[in-house]
Image (tube, rainbow, N blue to C red; front, side, top):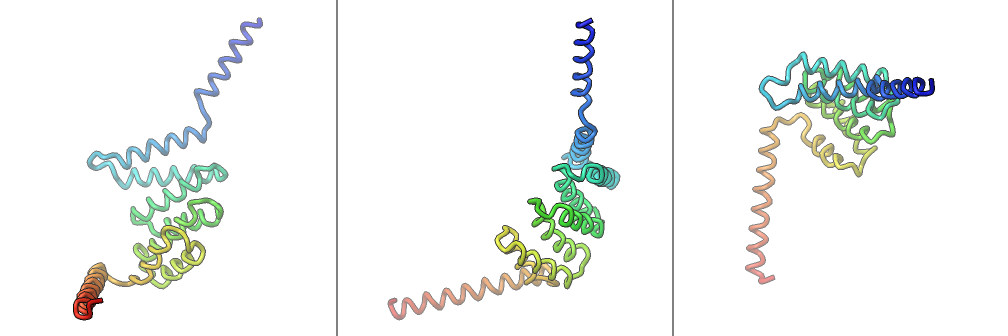
Length: 189
């Protein structure tokens, strides 16, 4: 009898281990969907696969709000939404991350990306400027703070305009340096 109980308990333990939690299976499914979507093979990235992955992220986030993967999945889902032509959905995901996980280390990036999507996908320059300014105020030492300042300077400009401005600055700098070198040669200092 003791052997039967031991075998039954061992079977139960092995059964639990092999099944894993529903949360673990969902995370594995998400990883599989990510791998299929981002595979290096031609035509791997499809709208259907992207939508399946977005739905899997959102399902996981709803079921497992307190899980440590939830903020990362929110960030990933927002990025995927913005890159598949769903900027409003992306902004909702960034807002949800900022609101539900205010102390998470993904929040500064979510704040910056919200401004970026507002600028580049939605086209609301004024709102983007406000969001970049909020980001700079809240995270002045963040590695993206300089990028936010540069984005504000270039809001509403075309890439050609930005390139022309950079080239003009380079030209002005080279003229100034040439004049300084000339002055050094004349004065000997």
